[in-house]
Length: 253
Image 1 (spheres, rainbow, N blue to C red):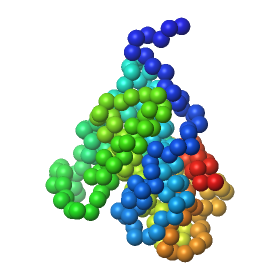
Image 2 (image 1 turned 135 degrees about the horizontal axis):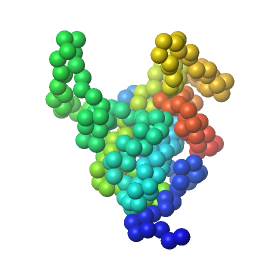
Image 3 (image 1 turned 180 degrees about the vertical axis):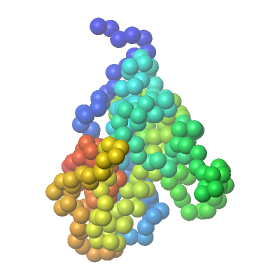
Image 4 (image 1 turned 60 degrees about the vertical axis):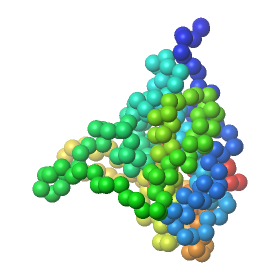
């Protein structure tokens, strides 16, 4: 059957294995880590962080691609991103970016103070210290490479959103990895719990393979691969967490 005009088939459908080439290079990853911590970052830790970020962006792109294919479009648009997140809560990461991007304007909700008065956004800081939002442009080359690898294209606004989500996610991953090193253990895991009104909620069981990462070994000055894997269990949950951990281990083996 011939595909209709404007229809495209993605080069990497959801669940397909990704290539070994990491779109986010180690110098970029280490620069993000330096933004949040003075700790040394090992080569394997940087590679693991790049792999986890690639997994997350791949899942987001594949979800958005599925939406575009259903509408017989040949480019991803920001609306595809919103639809993909609505369909799969596992890819809802980098929420700090949502408050910055016009794509999510009106969807993140207004904030009110204790008196019920609307809280207006504060003025943007002119601090010279890099932030995940300010530094989002650094991810564009890697995002475009990842889009090409998945056989899709995206409008500039969609590329900008992917840059921002990648930047915020990796920044949060770096912050949690540093916390694991400082505290020597994981105190929480990324989870989603379904609650029935009127009934007590039960905490989901934690897999033994995740518990194995909960207590670290080594010095308190270096972020290693396992610290990044431990941080991944904080940032992600469900199937995407398992894929991210598996691919990060393969990328650093």
